[in-house]
Length: 78
Image (cartoon, rainbow, N blue to C red; front, side):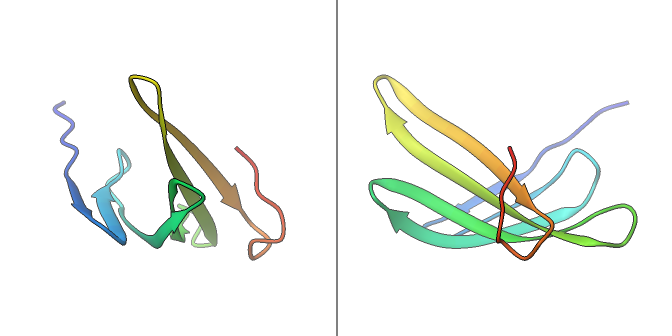
């Protein structure tokens, strides 16, 4: 089985096909020197959850962290 991942980068929007075959679109902007993007991700059970990614420059690269929220963004989990 061949897995293909397609990513398209725009300054305030990022979209890609997840390894589960879903299209994920997140939007945001620069905050405190990091790019912070968030959006809704549909789960296989049909429920939605918020996802947030943070990309921050570090020596020699970029640190990427991802979080999810199932309570409308009140709390976030890695």
